[in-house]
Amino acid sequence: MKVVICGAGQVGYGIAEKLAAEQNDVSVIDTSPQLVHAIRDTLDVRGFIGHGAHPDILAQAGADQADMIIAVTLYDEINMVACQVAHSLFNVPIKVSRVRAQSYLQSHYRNLFSRDNMPIDVIISPEIEVGEMILRRLSLPGAMETVRFGDDKVIIVGIDCGADCPVLDTPLRQLTELFPDLSAVVVGIARDGKVFVPHSSDMMREGDLVYVCCERGQVRRTLSIFGHEEPEAKRVLIAGGGNIGAYVARRLEDKQSRTKVKIIEHSRDRAIRIADELRRTVVLHGSALDQVMLQEADVEDSDMMVALTNEDEVNILSCVMAKKMGCKRNLSLLNNTSYPAFANALGIDAFVNPRQVTISKILQHVRRGRIRAVHALQNGAAEVIEAEALDTSPLVGRPLREVELAEGIRIGGILRDGNVITPSGDERILAHDRVVIFAVADKVRQVEQMFRVSLEFF
Image (cartoon, rainbow, N blue to C red; front, side, top):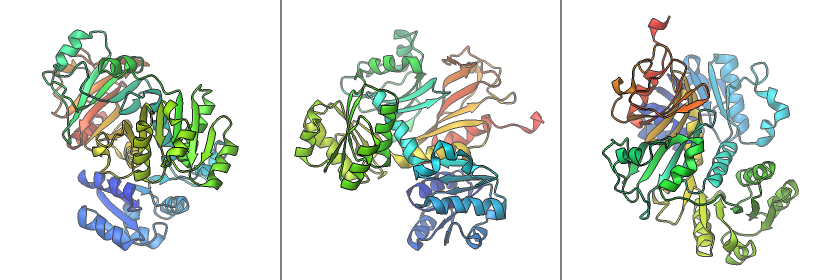
């Protein structure tokens, strides 16, 4: 696949890194010579210095032969114009744009991004994507990560194995014997900086981050089996009233949730603005690093501190301070890709990486075959993929015990006619089933091949 990426920042670099590693033909455009030189020096991609919306620069980058353009510069308008130029002048088939300003995304303007107006096929809104992920974390505070697939019927849960985890040193096959009616499958384990698909004889160790695929109704039971029975947060303190913080508060209000929300916002003008917009949320003007302000916000009575400022260091420190002052749990926004590895050691219970969320959303449209959803884990070390099985797929028709899956690939769940099926050796995948698969990074291409239409199909 030939892809043109406009923007060599964190997201653009992350997408280029992922696609280049999979032997795609990638060109990256950015106005910053430093960023372009850095991406040329470290990745197998072509770099072009210039404006991503200018036709001559797009032409140099090979837009006339591109299968896709991904516009992720810092500016919405540049991203949108780049997609428009790519469509009008170069007839690029797939156009993906990051759009952060919520004004463009209001429901009564939904026709703006249509083929007859501004032909953008996929709109990525990091604020909405990150906000929704935070809301899921709030509903399941015991989980380090939660990702939904199959119309929200299948959940991938990342669970931290602490010293008090009841199933430490238990072979995975014994979990099935101990809980035969549990619709859950351990699909992956992150340990000592590496991610792998475990065998039935493998055991979980203290410090592991275990990824479990389960039916939505079994998530809380699964968490309790791993020693996490934290109740849903009813008192939430948010540090940072930017787009994400305001979105989370607004959605909690819209859901008629009984959750009580308070926001600490450093900018007085912003605090006044969101206080006027929100109905039940209490907005306080001040610093989340001020102990007096945290006391005024009743941090000691809060169930969850959610730090969503633009500065990772402020997020980390405010989370640590809140917990020291009595807050039960915390969740931090972390943009720096090196911080998540130290999150637990820093005193962070859970975190969200906006870069990873955005890249996952884009990969969903890059992956070949009948791919419905993708989520990258552990900075791209593994992916969870939801795909539709075709008649020609090698998975279809045979008992799963006879299907030779490569090391590093595990089927976590099957969605058929709205029902979730836990995979077993006797189970057969049928055409049009939706399959949720965990795969380490170097096996993702094999998963794509399983769900591609073969020539024999025609």
